[in-house]
Amino acid sequence: MARFYNPQLATMVQPAAQIAKTSVKLLLRCIEKRQPAQTVLLEATPTPGGSVRAI
Image 1: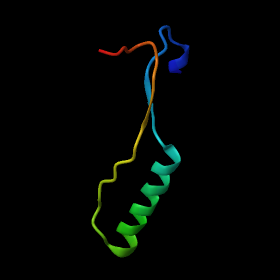
Image 2: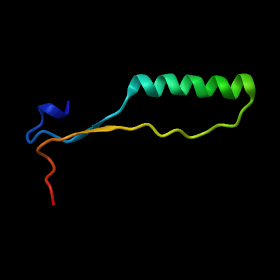
Image 3: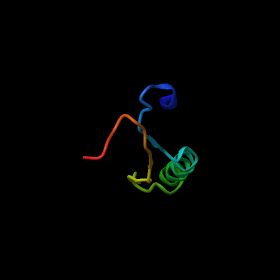
Image 4: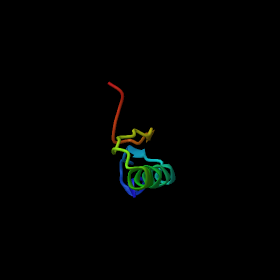
């Protein structure tokens, strides 16, 4: 949707497939092996737009 705005909005693209795969893997690990929950950080990719500028 960001591309339809004027100026075009800058956004962050998140790896949806990797988020889903990692979430299921961690959930099964918690259920089956009774391992504690953990936090995982996945890298997002910025998509530049006209709504921001260099300072």
